[in-house]
Length: 79
Image (cartoon, rainbow, N blue to C red; front, top):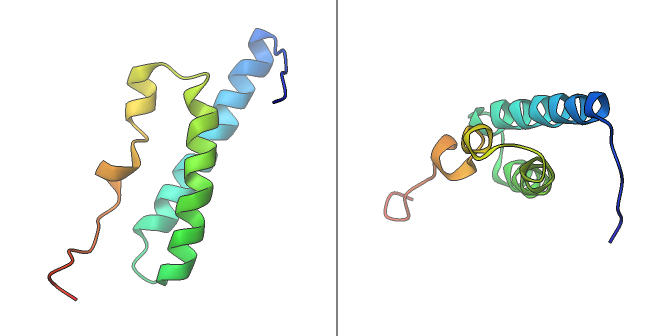
């Protein structure tokens, strides 16, 4: 485990960078042209970035980036 201390300005910058990265990955995940392997890799990375963001974000801000409600999933019955 690694610990890092940030001042207020650095914390706001980290918040901004993480939110922008999450936004970009959400756009990629919603793109119908992406194949399954690429979406799986993006989803894996999204979860890591989301956990980082969860350490500094309020629950209200964090709910905006909940993955399960944002990305449409294929139903198992309609293959």
